[in-house]
Length: 138
Image 1 (spheres, rainbow, N blue to C red):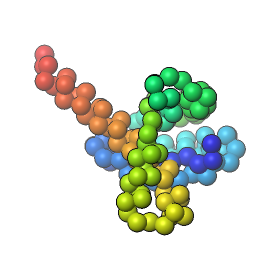
Image 2: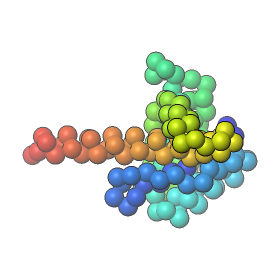
Image 3: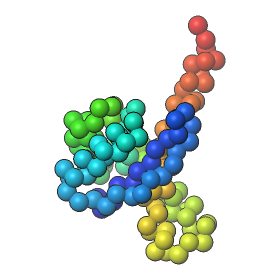
């Protein structure tokens, strides 16, 4: 609700790289900034983290994410998909703690790292799906 972690993939869709975290302002400004990023990076799709509950059910925050994604779909020229983000922030905090960064630096980096982990999980899913389809063949 305060920040938006942003990441992009390489041209081949293999690896995710974090971009600077966006500080939330007004919804319209946030949507416009993301639209600008999709244009700048020629995005083929936007992945929005979906904070589902531990059992996979909808939460108040996942409803907010769904509403945000719906509004974003009206702004960008590519598909917008929700992707399960459970535990990405936990994983990001764990990874940052292991680096020995100060608490202040970890807090500034956690959204970028979580966005990178989220996108990487999506890219890995796509790669696995392509691999499974290739194994089946025509």
